[in-house]
Image (cartoon, rainbow, N blue to C red; front, side, top):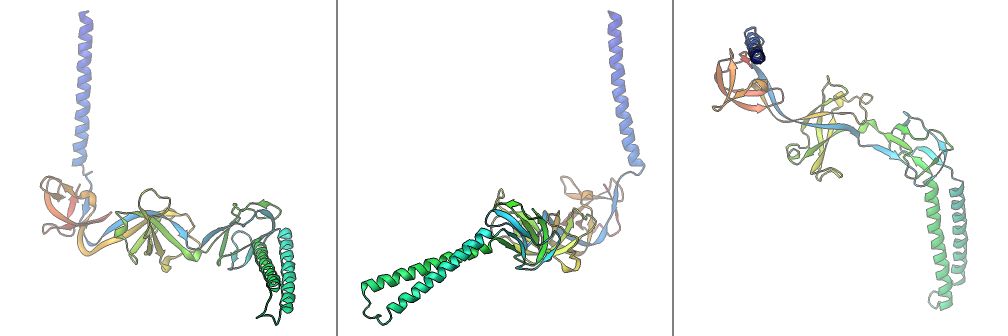
Length: 340
């Protein structure tokens, strides 16, 4: 029994010793790494510092429409293919118009008949404008109302016949076709053709009520798309929403950014591409700056470790950007080495 107690006592000492040894080793490695120069450093530079607001968004187009027929029916004609350029008013597709055309022709015939009947009635009552009898008035009124009803039926039939065709609402490119061949039945709720005008592409972001007041028309914007992370695109604010966006939770406002023509690449940008937009809120030229992560603080204030890790130099900061923070101090000069 005493042997067992001595064993567990010795084992506990060994465990404690191992824990202490591990801590000493880790501590030695930490301080050794500091002595070996693994501490991060940065140089104080002089240049431009920007305060920016970064919002996520996506590419959209002003002229972008999904077209569908106003009635169900069988597709009789598809006149375009995906990727084809079309002109405003061009017929893109058409339903079978047999029934609609027959209705139109019947309405046209009825209108001609009732117009002729009205002309005869007017001829019968001519000369009785001042002494028109009740019978003559009744006959004339019936003829006029029949003609009016026939005319309205004619307009409806004409419109229904026209609605059997899908026409391009603007110049653009056919982005997609649901049924690229005839003989298929389609419904009025089914999108048939999608068309986009690439020249009207813009970048849209959503700003909440605390952000939207920092954005104004004409404000400079830099965009980085997820598809092209190594390239920046310039633009400017074209529109800031006056009312919250429909369907959003909370007060979220639409902001439209017009992309500069200098780097506008129509064939490169696609609808739905996402990215970030940087809005320049303020900017200072020819000031000292350092990466934000090198600015430390304690109860006295903010400071930099200049020259070595123990040398605290207290400072004030100005503009705070994502990648640079303005340094305000007579004790800091361009080229100083700062430690983390």
